[in-house]
Amino acid sequence: MLDYAALRALAAVAQAGSFEKAASLLNVTPSAVSQRIKNLEERMGIVLVIRGNPCVATEKGEWLCRHMENIGMLERDLLEQLPSLASADDLTERVTVHVATNADSLGTWFMEALSKFAQNSMYLVHVAIDDEDHTADWLQRGRVSAAVTGFEKTVPGCRRVSLGSMRYHATASPEFVARHFSSGVNAESLRNAPALTFNQKDSLQTRWIAQTLGADITCPTHWLPSTHAFVEASLSGMGWGMNPSRLVHQHLGTGKLVELIPDTPLDIPLFWQINRLAADRLSGLTDQVSAVARKHLPA
Image: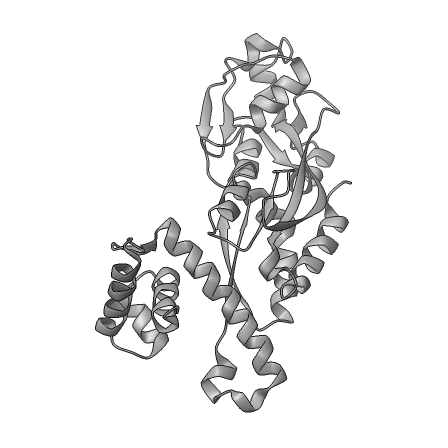
């Protein structure tokens, strides 16, 4: 049989990042939390928590945390139907739902969906950020229950909903274009003009170049891990970047930004994938994500 007191301790440590904070959440002592997790690890013969600052769950630990997330949702459903079974603490306990998304979605449309869901739900939300080509890995490794992803194939054990496409424009300030692309946008000028890159997983610049010029070019780049910093850096003439249409539409209209090559957007299809075990109980979240995506993402 599973030791649910130990599993709750594990989930609390993974969420809070320390044994002391987990103890406060569970209203027990830190030594009790430590002992419960130690006993569980000895019983299973594997490490479940990497002790550090913060403490983080291992891959196997993450699977157990998602199991407890599902158990928490089931218990909430049960107690809502049979409130006589619940103590006052049970009725106020909040379940945290873990989801993953790419930064550009979070910075443009996804927050609207999360906010509408949270306003009408007892669930809390923990959002993880990764590139849209990699958020499916979070689902596959059991680190989240749902994800906005560019991975078109249905992740095993999940349900998939098509959301539409995130549209990007290769943009820069007029001064930047005049300085670096006076002879046009071509392979030679792109090899010398500084680009903007989110992180090592960001391939939007190379994908746009391949789509538009049919070339494989490595550009000099500034590294900026922020959706809104991309726009500010483009406006200031720091570099050219692939910016979401929703964030630069007004700037393109006023001429503060221009497309490197007019009418050459890059569309990245996005999908909502959610673990089947959580899908029914999180149908409200799926409904909000789908509705907001229909409003903001091209089909």
